[in-house]
Structure formats: C-alpha cells, structure tokens
Image 1 (cartoon, helix red, strand yellow):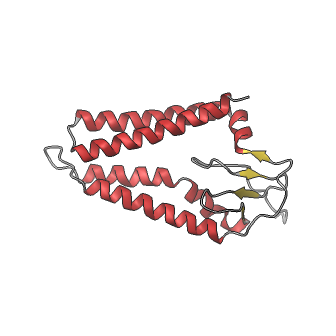
Image 2 (spheres, helix red, strand yellow; image 1 turned 30 degrees about the vertical axis):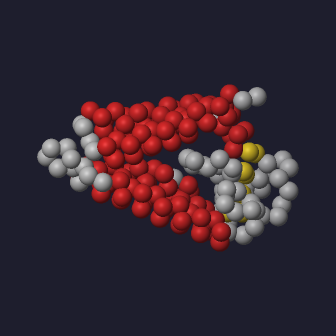
Length: 178
C-alpha cells in the first residue's frame, strides 16, 4: 500500500468560470460574491465538486417534480416552478456558505492553469458540453410548448433555455478566443 498522497485533479465541473489549479495540485476558486480567492482543501474537494454541479441537481429536481406533478390533462401548475426556485436558491446559498468557509488563498497566481486554458485544451469536451447544454434548454422549452403547459412553466423553461444558451456560447467563445 502506497503512502504517496494523490494529487487533486486540475479543474472539474460545470459552471465554474474562475477556478484555477496550481502547479502543486491545489484548487483555487473565486466566488463572484467574495472579495478574495479561496483554496479548496483536500478533505473538502468532494463536497466542492458536488456543489459545482448544483445546476444539474437543480434541473434534475425540477424535472422530476414537473413529471410527477403533471395531471392527466398536462396541467403542471406553478408548484414545480416553486420547487425549482427553492432548490436553486438553497443550492446557491449552500455553495456560497461553503466557499465563505474555505481559507483565503494568499499565493501568487503566476504559472497557474486558468479555466480558459483548460477549455481551450479540452476542445472535444467543451464542444460536447456546450451542445448538450444548449440541446437540453431547447428540448425543455419546446416540450413545454408542445404539451401546452401553463404560461409560468413555459416562461420558466424559456429562462432555463436562455441560461443554457449563455452557458454554451460562453464556453464556445472561451474555446475560440486567442
């Protein structure tokens, strides 16, 4: 059995726009609402990667609630939207409090790999992630139109589609930037 410590992966996740990995394998994250960069400690990395994918959990919980709360006539009502918004807010607050509890990073950022560099290096994954995210938004919106859901559900799906579109085009722009 080896006593050698494993290195943390460089960068992982969806929706993390300002994460960097140092040459020593540390992961540093800059939350938009916090003034300083924070270091993700090795024991907290599992929870950090879980919370990085909070948007997928939001979409999963919202979609499942929409499926189970639709009646025979396709009437969904506003309850799935409320469940979706509450889930999103709870996950965002949890992630903010988690980031706030991480230690402040005081190291220099020279020689670190930025998220932009990783997106450029991993072109196939970036294209796949962008296309699948965009397709998810379009499918949700079109599905709600075809099934004649309530106006509030259609508007909510339009907002989700807009978010998916912005995410997809942002990553494609990062990949194509010089």
